[in-house]
Image (cartoon, rainbow over all chains, first blue to last red; front, top):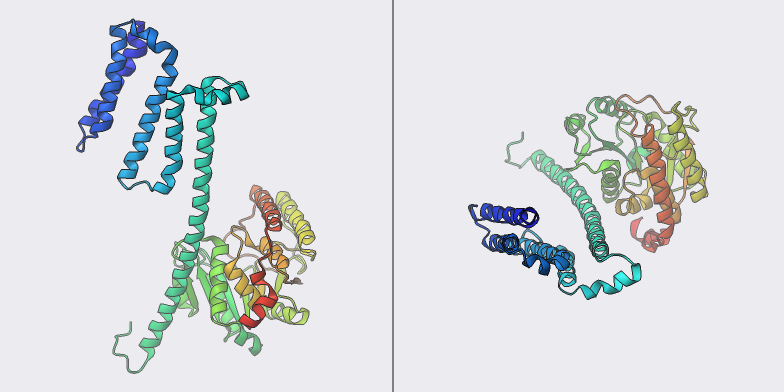
Length: 182
Length: 249
C-alpha cells in the first residue's frame, strides 16, 4: 500500500497530465509520451516491489534527470516556436544541461561537495541557485537597456510630432494650399 | 526684457495638469507676450495637451509617461535644436512665480554661470513642518554642497535656467527619477558651474509634492547612491566646455 502511495500516485498523476496533453487541439505528443513513459515506469515499482531496491539509492538522481529533461524540452520547444530568443535561452539551456550532467554523472559535483561540506542535494541547489542569479541579473541588464531605448524612442516621437505639426500649420497657412484647413 | 524673450524659451513639464496649466500659461503670456513657451505633456490622461494647445503654446506630446526627467530632457533637446540661448524650466503647479524669470536670467549673466537655481529658502520660504521631509532635504543640501563644492540650499528646486552647453549636455545625459540634485553634481563634474538666487515660491495651485514622508527618505537615499556612483564614473570629455565651444555657439 505504501509503495502505491509513494510511486503509484505520482505515476498516475503523470499519466493523467499526459492524457490532458493528448486531448488538446494541438496535442503535445512528445512531452505526453515522455510523461506516459515516466508514469508507467513509476507504476511498475509497486507491481514489482523488488525494483525499489534498485531505485532507492538513486532516487534523487532519477528525479533530477526527469526535471532536467523536462526543463530542456520546454526551453527548446519555446525556441522552436520563436517565442524565446536564442540570446536569452543560452543560460536556461546551461542550467538544464548542468542539471542533467549532475544527474547522470554525480562525480562532477563531488568536488563542490568536498570543498563546501554540503550534501549532494544542497550542492545541486547551490549550482542551480547560481544559474538563477545569473539569469535574473541578465534580465535586469536587458531591462535597463530597453528602458533607455524606450525613453529615446518616446522623446524622438514627440519631437517628430512637433515638426509635423509645424509643417502642417505652415502648409495650411500658405496661400496656394488647396488642402482644406480644419 | 525683450532680449530675454528673443533668446530664451520656457519649458514646462506637465503631467495631468489641466486644472492649473491654463491659468499659469495666461499669466506668463500677459507678462512676456513674446517668450516662447513649450509644454512637455508627459502622456497625461487628462486634457493637459488640449488646454495647452488652446493657449497657443508649443506642445510636445510624449506617447508614454517618462517621468519629469524624461520630459525635461525632451524639452532641453527641443530648445537646443531650435537654437535658444537659455532654457528656463518652470513647474506647472504654479509654485514658481513667472515674475522671477528675469531675475534668474540676469543672475546667470552677471555671475557667469551655466545654471541658475531659484531657491525658495534663499527667497524666504520656511521649510515644511514635516520633520522627515525636513531632514531629507536638509541632509541632501549639505551632502550636495560638499560634493559640488558649491553651496546648495534648495537641492530639489525645479525652477532653473540653463545655457546652451548644459542644454546639449542634459539632452544627452540627464539623470532619471529625481534629476534636480544629481544633475547639479553631474554638471559640476563636467566642469560647469551653477549658482542660486532667492525666489519666493508660491503655494501650489494643483497636485501635491511627490516628496512626502517616507518618500523623501527614499529620495535622499537614492540620490546619495546616485551621487556616489557618479563619482565612480569617469568624466566624459566629449561634453567638456572646450569640446563644445566650437561646435555649439
